[in-house]
Image (cartoon, rainbow, N blue to C red; front, top):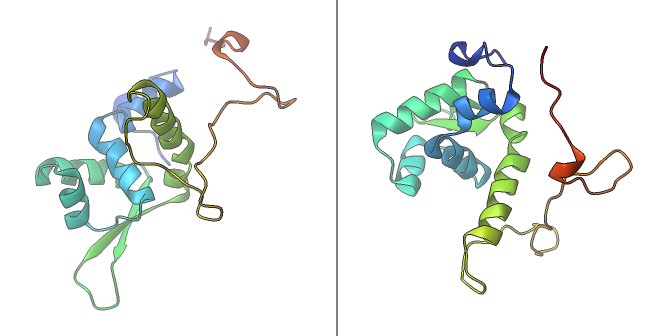
Length: 148
């Protein structure tokens, strides 16, 4: 994956990442791709996004190596957008946002969609950063080593 030109000077990985996937539509496209949506028309229908915005975000995600376009079926004129390995690496990011949203943005007992494990049917456990010794890390246990 190559660095997008407009962020190549950024020394902070968070700044680089959010310049690419930090807008609402890009993250929701990635979320929908995890949910199995592949076609332009299905993304548009599910998201309610304007065609020009969807085209732009899909192009950026393809250019960044997050999605790859491919023929939908043998002989079909349709194209699908499929997550690459780099795109699938965004799963913990989407999961963390989902879990934060569940805890911070819903009243107790308020209904919302739920991510479940396909094998067990149980809700996905709360994701927490772990240290090398498997203890839970908090923000107080970390610091950023800045470039000199």
